[in-house]
Image 1 (tube, rainbow, N blue to C red):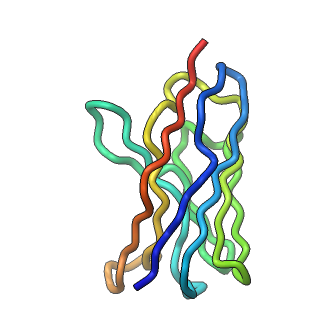
Image 2: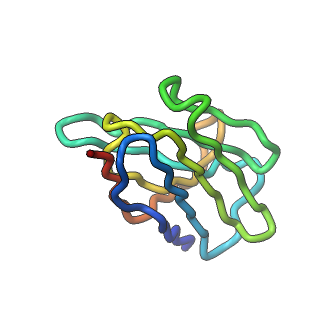
Length: 119
């Protein structure tokens, strides 16, 4: 059973930066996407950014140009560099690994990590 361990959340002021990391305990196939979803209070969980081992990625429109996702296949680890953070980025961020472009395959979730942006 693969486990995802996320780290790097915290509290920053608007305009600040944070870097999230998520490491898988086992091997994640390259055709699997890894990345993050987030859930703010009273809102549904939404995709933030995911990337496959071949470099294909999807990101929420509101984070494009501010967040950069990268992946180290050898380490089964994915990173999310978040710059120019805004108050609306405040949420619990959940690490994710699952099949890309299909519903076939196991989906894995990590524990949530809180990101808070306020002045």
